[in-house]
Length: 478
Ligand code: GLU
Image 1 (cartoon, rainbow, N blue to C red):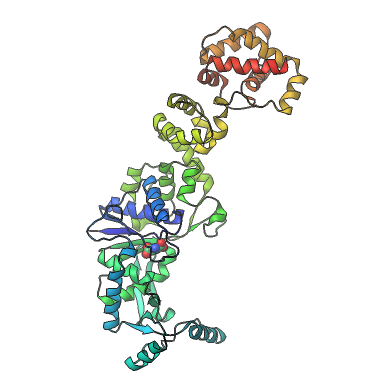
Image 2 (image 1 turned 90 degrees about the horizontal axis):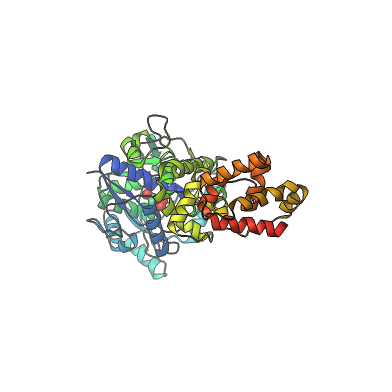
């Protein structure tokens, strides 16, 4: 049975890079019928926060990713939160000490600093000297008597670590490149490269799919697997994600967390679709693919090694396609409600639906509702200086609005067709047409010089608001 895991550290919002890692694990699991595990890596006690864990879980769920085992769900290999597994790590640290694969190291920060400076002076890359590798029991006792607290280091064997990465292919690293590394800190906290091995092994993970930034950690992990006699999983290191300027994606590139995208009005389906294309693509050239289709086509072997570029303009475009063509109106409106309310646009669901239907073709994110939907909610918009001078410089401006008012003042309702008929009549009877007719009406009704079709607008806002806005204009300029 194949098993994969996503193992975030709850030290901040779910970054897009991590979201893509979670997504590819999920896609692998769904495509392969594997089990998907969520494990919270919270051994960095200073930076990890429970709130971040909760938000991570919310954001993963928002994206439509579901796991089979995890801290919120339980499962046969729990607990799934590293802070609850410290006893397990200490057992294995003990085992490594007993079998001679690890040792206590008492070197102080100052001593290590000296070693480092010496290496720099000699122009060599720094590796721990291994000074404490062969301390006798007596030497250890003397050091402890001085009050020194040790770390535990892994005794790295001299060898070339070789593995076949599913994405990157053949990888070889000489262990001289890293030297004996710390697995348990002075304060007793075990470190990532050690605990990740224990967890992946005990949770029976078969495929470790994670970001390329972990590639250099993998050989360190492999030597621990070997020391403990664990089966080594297969590795797949996903390509890095860059911004459009080809530098590592970061805050400088704008919103780069899933939460920020959600708040900016992106739909989870579009984010799912877009992120799936960061490092992978389907057999054909299609870019808009429903979840099921992505799952059925996704093969981890097909992921590229070369960096993926996060292109916000393309994400916006894709989101626009989901808004216009994919979600049905009811669902789209449901997602939009919190945005309408957030902008202070108060109405019932049916009204929101009508507005959504009128503007969905002209927005790319739900944030765009703010500007595009304004005319459906704001009756008392300001008459700007620009409008004032326009109205004053053209006597027909006021006249057109006045004629229109005469035509509608006794109506009890107004549809798109009514509006079309009325404007046709005005054209026939008075000769006003085109911009000369519609521009004054648009200004009087919305205060703006472009936007949704006026016929649609009047039908949605209804006759009372139409009368109110037109009268307000006439009173202001009369
Ligand atoms: N907690 C690590 C991270 O967030 C997990 C790395 C891994 O998948 O092994 O980067």
